[in-house]
Length: 174
Image 1: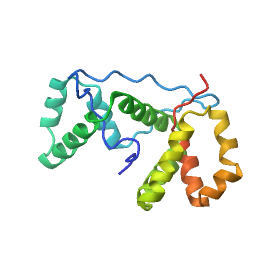
Image 2: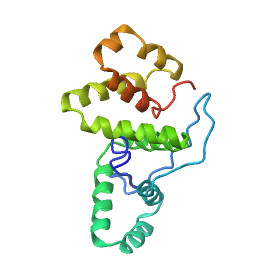
Image 3: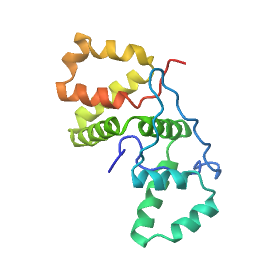
Image 4: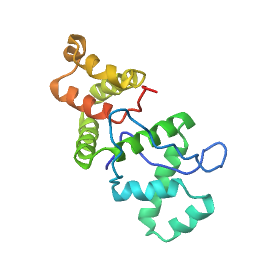
């Protein structure tokens, strides 16, 4: 499933407050033109649901086949269990992903899927590295990834996965 790493599901409410989630502003990345979103159908549905009131969402979900509705509702519940800051980061990352050119979006999605196929130990190491890189300014990330220390800790394939996924980390050049 696309964007499984970033977006196991989206939802429109904060679990604790019962309020619709705030819209996350469209991220601006230095040196990257804003492309038209190229959402996958599942992401389009989830993004629309995330912007609806609970009543609107219930009406929309009632139109779906039972299996699809159950799948979306489970994803929404899982998303609502996340802390608000994690929800916001995931929404922001999805928006960044959708702002990339279609070819790059496909590369990032392929890397997400490949990450999910790695052994648990390697997934944890890569996710830890991505969290470390999250706090770095955009312009420092390539230099960091070219260090001997980084190259020794990750295989060439893992380095490619990290590089692709770093594309959707929110920028720190503000």
